[in-house]
Each structure stands twice: as C-alpha cells, then as structure tokens.
Length: 351
Image 1 (cartoon, rainbow, N blue to C red):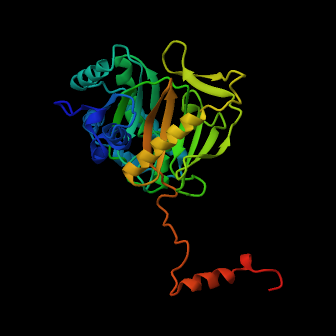
Image 2 (image 1 turned 60 degrees about the vertical axis):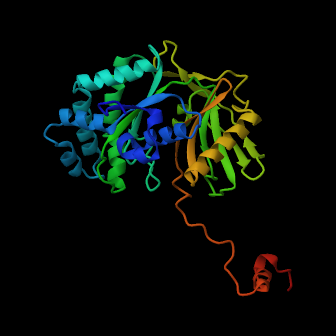
Image 3 (image 1 turned 90 degrees about the vertical axis):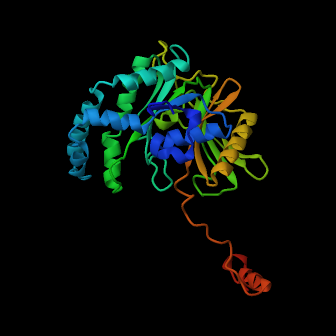
C-alpha cells in the first residue's frame, strides 16, 4: 500500500485482504499474484471509504436510517437511499485522497481508459453473492472522472436494489466498500465461465457463455449468448450452442463510456469464440478452480489474441450443496449388485 494506506497496487493484495479491498479487489489481486492474466490497476481501499464517510456523514446517521426501513415498503427505501446517495456524491474528495488516486491513475498512463468497479466488503462471499448490485463504470478517462466515479461507486452501496436485497436477506448493513480501477480492455468478445455446470452442479465440466463486445450485454439480458460445455477430463468441447446475437456493447465513439449497437449481419450467427479459445478458457478456469479449491464463477474477455480474467468468485448455488454418495456403502460387494437388480429400471418385463 501507499504510505497513507488509501491506495494500493492490485498486485499487492490477495485473498486475505478482503477487509481492506473488498471481494472484487481481493479476488483480482489473488489472480494477479498467482500469474493469471488480469488487467493492471489499483485499489482505493476501505480506509479511504471510511474517511470519506466520516466527512459525508459526520453525525453517523446513515446506518440508523437504513435500520428503520422495511423491505415491504419499496417507496420508503427509494426515498431514503436517494437522499443518502446525494449526501455521499456531493461531499468533496479530501485533498490527500485525490492526490493518491491521481498518482495511481497516471501510473497507468496519461489519459488511460479505465474501468472503475465497486468492491464491497462481503461481496462475492460464498454464502451470499450480491455482485452486480453496486456500480461499475467503463471507459472512464481522466483523474477527475475517476474521482467522480469513485464517489458514485461508494454511493451505490445504498442503491435501492442493494438495500432491498440486504433487507430481504436479513443481512447486516454493509461494512464498507473499496474501489478497483483497472486499465480498460477493448474485447472482441466477453462473457462468463462456470467451473461446474450451472444447471446440474456437475463438476466434471466447465460451462462458458459469451457474446460479441463487452460482457455488459449479457448482464443487461440483451442477447442470448453462445454457450460451450468442455469436459475437464478430456478437454473436449462436448456441447455447443451458437445463438443469433443481434446487439453488442462497445466503447462509445467519443471514447467515454459505452454504447449499444447492432451486430454486423455476418457476425450474428457466428460463434464469438473459436475452439482454441474455448479450450484455452477452460484451462484457465481449471487453474482458477484448483487454486481456490472450489467451483468458480469467472468473468473473462478476449482482446486481440489474449484472454484476460476480469473477476472470479465462488459459485454459490451448487458449491455449497453437500454431494450425496453415488451409492450407500454395503457390507459385501455383491450387495451392490443385488440392489441394482432390484431397481425397477433394470427389471425385465414380466420378471
């Protein structure tokens, strides 16, 4: 970290630093540490958030206001959270933090395009993933714009959807948020990858979904993605489905933010990945899963000839379920045979 502890390089943090850099920051730092392909960047730490919140909320009233809300009253949640977000986004950034963020941003390159991504403490935890409920900003340029999006990310901890989710799940009020700032990539295609089947929990396969352009087009639900299933055992692509992909998200023409466009007619029904890319993604997914020791939900992008990983979190649906044994242990090996012979599915008609 820097001397102030407000900003640190992405490669300086890892899985044990969630309390300081949030779920996303810890995951990306861990991937960077073990040599997996991650875009360069830095983290604006929880310490920076806490200092900013003391300035924005000197009376420490926000938590008390949230505690009075009920998940059954969405209008009250919307009114309260809008006021809280305004309180955060209009508070000036402290000079020390502005200087630290500006220096870290310029180290990525003058006028470098970056992604500014929320990294809440508790986000992407195995027991309750609420990734996507806080803000992310793409194709941000300039230190001033980064500082503005930083405050918007902090405020998004109190988005109506995020607060409603926490109330509905009876989760405690959020502790804090860090911000990940990464050099932007301009992907030809992007998507998600699950290192177990998202429909059955089968851990012998990797499921990949993708489309043209930025992965935000999948999050928005504007396209049906291409899908591929790869066997971890043989490395073969055992199933594929190529969708008609009519829309994509890409960098806006002015270089600031993103825009949605129609996909060129000759690309709509072409796969967004070739077979070598599918297999390369599957190998990366296997590496990530082996490192963490549990099935993962991974965001990826293909840019030029390179694949980069944009996030990895624990898969929260199947990985938490106990795996039942294939067969109950028997006293004698032949008892297993007799059990199978007694099942209706293997009995012959008339027997």
